[in-house]
Image (cartoon, rainbow, N blue to C red; front, side):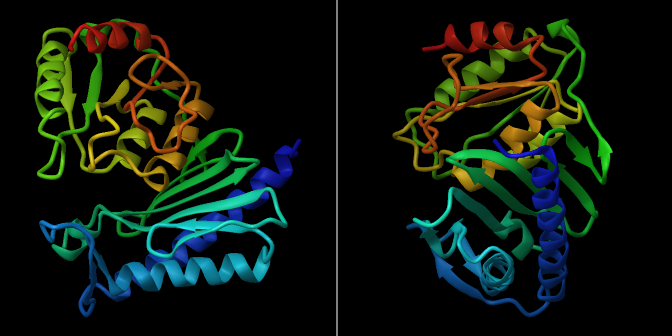
Length: 276
């Protein structure tokens, strides 16, 4: 078992990586180029800034932890047979927003030990918001906790909206669930970033985050987008399951995410599960 001190050392190291990678992203905002188009609609892209950020992060990990494995959005998987550690990296979460000049993008870094996340970072370079977790969860080094709200009608809930690449089969369910939630909660909000919704749930700004996806949905979550945030919610005292209320063990995330303060979790699942 890893000591708390070792987990903290990894977190502080990852925070430094994220800050420097963030400086790279900011410096490239005026001269980036599109390097890769990932989907038929030509909407999912990777830029030279994505690659520059990722190359820096990977180079630093290899320098200080040469035996560790790495799973990165642009470079793919490079797992190690020599270590139980694997780094999970999204060097620029919100590439399309970044390309449009929107400042609310993230750098996401998680570290797994024996396939279980033990540390996570979500850093927003232009606001300097640093969400991080090891055994506790922090915002800019201050401990944060999930909310204590247990009355559903008083809650703020973040819901992941569908997109063009979402499965036509899943869109009606999302809007039906949103309609049912509108009848039960105080307010529904949505951010484009899974990481942000999870981080805001961890800090108690949202009381829960609901994302409805399926294995047929090509727009479903990617592990590097949610691994840091899932751990943040758990370490801040919250609860995270799939739509059936089961622990999330499949990293392809075929059955959505419900993350909450724990107090309203069962109430949310009841609403979601009534929608077929």
